[in-house]
Amino acid sequence: MTRIAVALFNYQDGGRQPDGTYDFTKLQRAFADVDEPPALILFCEAKNYRDHAGQPKYTAAETLSDELGVPYTVELGSNDRSPMPPAIFYNPDTLILRSWWNQHDPGIYQDQRNVARFAIRGNAPNQEGRTEFLAFVHHWSPLSGDNRLEEARRASRYGDAQPVPVIGGGDLNATASGKHLPQRDWMAAHFSARTHKGVRGPDGQWGPDTRALDHLIGVWDETTHQREDGCGLHAIAEIAWRTDPTQPILPTVNDGVDAGGGLLIDWLLVNDAMTPHVIPDSYKVHIPEAGQQHPPTTGSSPSPSICDRAHGSARPQQDGTHHSNTVTLGRRRHDHDRDGLSTSKKSYQATPVNSPPAGQAAGRPGPMPHQAPVPARAARRKRDDRRSGTPRFSAGPAAPPCPFWTCRPDGGKPRRNPVAGAIPLSFNRKQDREQETSQHARRRSGSGAAVRHRRLGRLGRRRPATDRTGGRHCSR
Image (cartoon, rainbow, N blue to C red; front, side, top):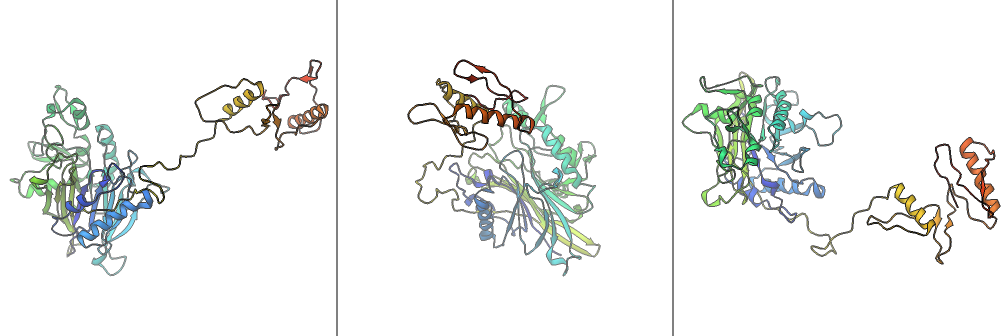
């Protein structure tokens, strides 16, 4: 039997500091208490991990490898809502990654994002015989229950409609129905905070918005103590709780984060095909020690095991401490062949990646970004200003030089530039006019036919020649 440990971990801002550097010591501390190194880590809030050629994500993987002695490989997911996509860290000695959609891959569908297909390396000598499973990691909207419900609908294809075993989870920012789950005093929170994860009922009382999770795992029936309907996904926290109902299901939000109490919002889910392989007593929520619990902005995490085994998720506090859960799952290829999956987590210290470039003092601004070209209307306005001698002033960026005119240094009349489409100024004004007339004729009719024009004044000035659309070609 192959046991695969799986961990779900929510690291605040991915360890990114206000100055743009990264501190992974709290990540290292979070994974210091795992029973065994996880083969798969579902990771949330990989903030700006693509910057600097991916240096933050590689540093995080190296940090976990140094702490746990596992050569982790990392893949970044996608998040259209923020620069904090989820990520997966996996042990290539145990798991073979067969598919993972990157953020800008062509042909991707929304419900395929952040979903990995793995094969278990050790349970067969060749590619055809290896057991496969799917693993997904999501970070749902923190502000809107309607958005979370849409995200749940996209994840529903990995429930009973999926024949391949599936384990997944993430920071889903919502709880499910059922009084056996951690509850919250909603009136202790401000109105805006209540609207993020709560909803006002028909009687005017506030309660949790459970629509998204209930869509996946079903609505809890307080009479039968069972869930009804749902899309064929099951919460590992409840699977473990059923084996020993005397042990309460713990919240995954640290004390002092949410007014009125923390909820279970970091979930590990399995589908029908994976459920028989879960090792229920391996599920664990890792709670930080009392001395480490400072005012946090994130919560705790669960971890389970599957055969091949899986762990749960953790939400670190501001100082990097966290609650985390672990569980073991099992997968069966044949009735006589059982594999196991498990999960866990840890943390690490990183080298700053946003140090100033060589030759530039710290805090000194770099080169200014390139300014976009001025629209053609502004360029024409500035050209007309030069001709009329009454320039207009604006606070916008300077217009580019007109391609047809050049201001003379002695303040005289601007000279026309000898560029394509313009006729050089000569000493013979009559010849100039004839050349311009011939050029406009070719533009209008494609031939050298002459175009009649009126003359105004004794000096021979004329009205501007125009094309059929009324656009001005030139004027003097």
